[in-house]
Structures are given as C-alpha cells and as structure tokens.
Length: 69
Picture 1 (cartoon, rainbow, N blue to C red):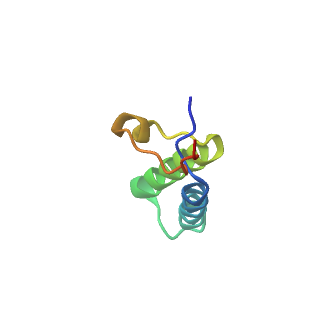
Picture 2 (tube, one colour; picture 1 turned 60 degrees about the vertical axis):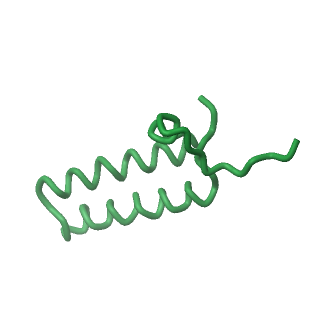
C-alpha cells in the first residue's frame, strides 16, 4: 500500500474520529446513528494511522505532498 493520506488530512481524520467518539460515548447521539458514527470514526482513525485510504486509491486521489524530482 502506498501512502495517499497527507499529514493535515490525518489530523482532520483523527479530530473527526474523536468528535464522533465523544458524541456517542457522551450520550449525545444514540441508537443506529450513534453506531454508524462510531464505525465511521473507527475507519477514520485506522486510515489516519496507516496513512492509506482505499477510496482515495479508487478515485486516484492523494493528499500527500508531491516530492520534487
């Protein structure tokens, strides 16, 4: 897997994952929508940790800075 998630994108993903966790575990969002948020938050956290997003590769996107040759 080639890294396709840049540092700013990783930070944003971790912030959103933390926000979703707080909303669910704080009892602000419950039920099915809460579970969906927890699952999405987990996906965001994992993709931020490994630096690879499968959707980015499908669409040919990357938020990593390009290195000058």
